Length: 290
Figure (cartoon, one colour):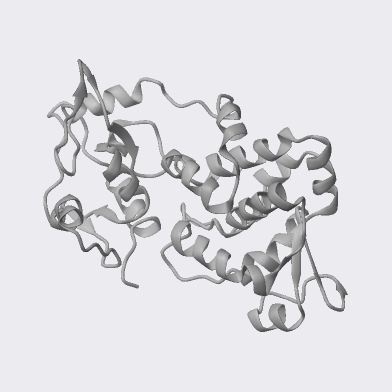
């Protein structure tokens, strides 16, 4: 069985770049649990809270229920569900999943192949991360689902899709080696430190390695941008999510005080952020009150 191909072809709701990472998040969670307990069943009532938290933090801004991927992932051949009455999912309704004692686990054949080929776990993990999430969130996501990072770090040397190695320096130079949000411009000797090229439309969602889809951001603001804490308005001003909270002076200085400040513009010979890429980030990543 080609499990990499099967995971690549997970059936997901798609429309004009809309994010729907529900199944990938459940699969990552299941792989993390498999690594710890070799495929013990995941009873819906026991894991619902964990899955809700994953969807709230790494899923789309719109509200969603973990009951949907718990049921619908069975159609992809990588996940199986049984109830107190036998094999098969009772449906995607929360009440039915709870009342029937629904329990999910990786498909039997996949569990067998994972035992025979330990490297398959890392291949699947790497594939899911690269197809659905930006690099700034990979380590954090693995920690969130309980996947040990040591083998993953070694496997990360193999990439399925190659980025343009020159893009980081091109983006940093376009913004004069300053964070577009806060102006940070640290360097160690002659080399910038703590500055990164941040994709606006995620690379995992066909975001190109071009300056009009990138910002020079410090490490803190890159992470906050990818988590939807920060966004960019149509007038290229900084937006702070109304869901963000922070009580210390540092939180105010580094985050909330940035609200409505204009972002730094690139050099005159460099393109500004593309409107379609900015709009994608606003609809798929930025966290609104709704």
